[in-house]
Length: 90
Picture 1 (cartoon, rainbow, N blue to C red):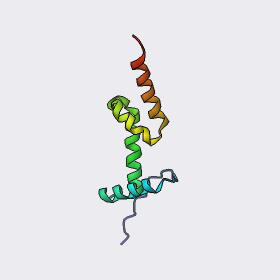
Picture 2: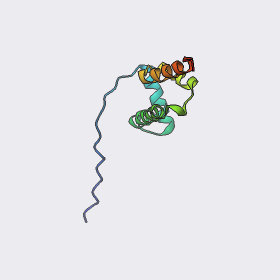
Picture 3: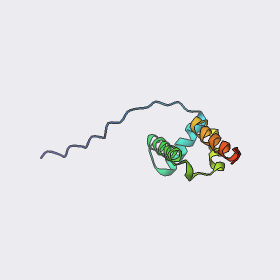
Picture 4: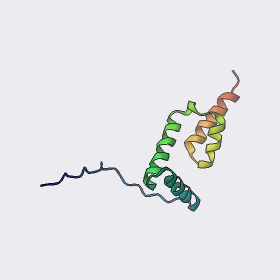
């Protein structure tokens, strides 16, 4: 009797990434806590960041300011635009 064929995983591009040791430890710790593979935790975070950027109005200025530590130029630009709008006389 022939067994069932395994479904092949969807082909997805591979990305190689080097991170700081502290970030790596944080990723591993969070993946273990959530019972995920390391790659699944990285993907989960990337999806969260992408959603945050695409819906900038969901987050207040304080949250965006806290994210500046992530060194994301797009977040810095969003915050700068908000500050400029608030400083612009009406």
